[in-house]
Image (cartoon, rainbow over all chains, first blue to last red; front, top):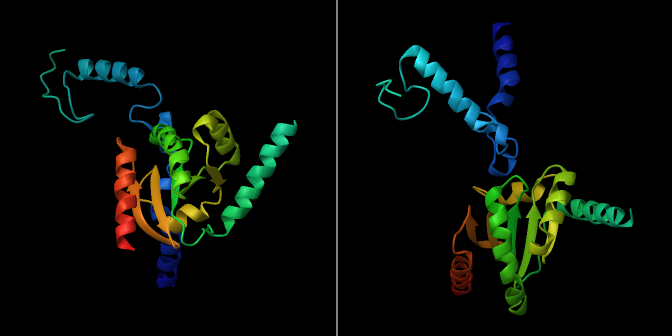
Length: 70
Length: 144
């Protein structure tokens, strides 16, 4: 019974690991799929408020020293 | 109305055609250009290919555009917008059967085919497409 459950689960989730081919990236190419969503400026403002409140910087993206000086 | 009906007929015919894997003329060099409406680099590449079309036609080299958009509506809208840059035959591969057969590593993709065999590939945006194509076509000739 346990083996059947494992096998059923493996079959069920096998569809989740299918590789997206280069010609299937239409959805990934949408503006809304960019980092920060459709409006990058809004994301920048949100990050600025967050970093000011937390008195830190970095971690949300690459780079930045964490001085909190802006 | 008449125009949209004609477009729909062309689209349907090319979609049906695309369902069989692309039959190409033997002993003829064909350049297959895979593109899609969602691919920004494709928009830059198509005008470059369009410029080369007439010269290649004289040399007996055929260019075939393959639109890999899954939605026929998106494909037709894109082709209508880019029609001045699409002087060559375009096939709508809505079922993605042709592109899945060639398996490009990126978009846009160019395959140079001779005698039903791929002799060269170009993936992604190419700044100097004309020179690169010339070089690849030359390599294909030498391989024969």
